[in-house]
Image 1 (tube, rainbow, N blue to C red):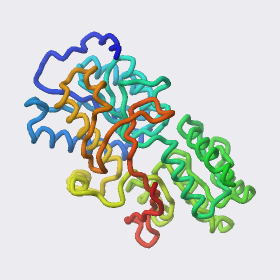
Image 2: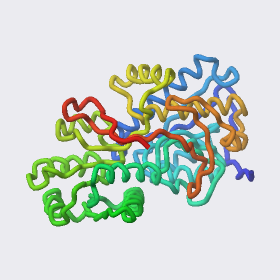
Image 3: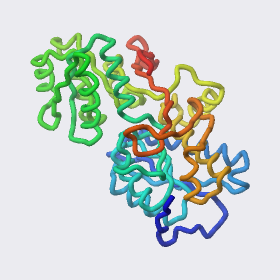
Image 4: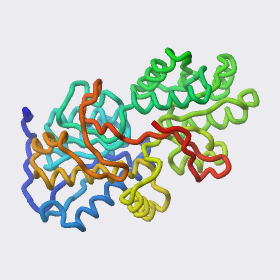
Length: 370
């Protein structure tokens, strides 16, 4: 593998700790709630690695940078962390931000294990430097489309905003649904208010509305408007990107936030490791951990094993992705090359379609697995 030249200051001089740079959205307009869960998982795993002796006797140190859902901030953070001599990069939740970070990391020759972003084209060109735990969007959203078809929905409307991520999701849904008798109509929320959206849903005779928009705005006002429109009493509201996973959704919407199916990357039942980590994460967060918290934990578990086995040289870390075999909280993690995906990919990430139970909005119901 050709190693790009290291930026000035890339050589670690202190020798006391092994550093991992963590990219996390912790402030608005980033989804700070997701960032908090991601960071909790990362930090819990780092603490456990250090309790077990660290990396060849050296403590593992997490150097955290807030991306705030800003690709430019993420690129600047990658540059800074590379110069600080991190052995690898970890994290990120927002797909467009992760894409910018992954592209920069590959250019600098810094291995990056992406925790949670799903955009298929995480880098424009295939790279050896980047691996990912979350399933690619094409896999998860096709599973979601199968759920819609199985529930009898053929006329799908998407409330969307301009974004590479939302546009990619719409394309995946349309390509999967069209050959199976389904249709997708796009409703641009930069041109419609929630009331006009409801009128459009009636006009198009949609049986399902998918929220491909930001949270809380405009997702929360859309849900409230649709729930209160008697013409739309039978319509299914869905949120494949996972907005209802977090407590803030239930706080904002109450009962209106239930029965809105979304994608979640957890197995039907956690094994012993997953159950133990779930308890520890719950204590750390003060609430039930989301799948994003498990993604954070698994990220560090993989990197720690790689660093123990292959040392802290960046090129050796990147070369080790295909040899990874680590028991994570959600199953054994191994990376492979997937057609159409530019990075090393965990190919067996569990995928569920779940919703909040209307009878008990704090409880999740598994509706479909893929």
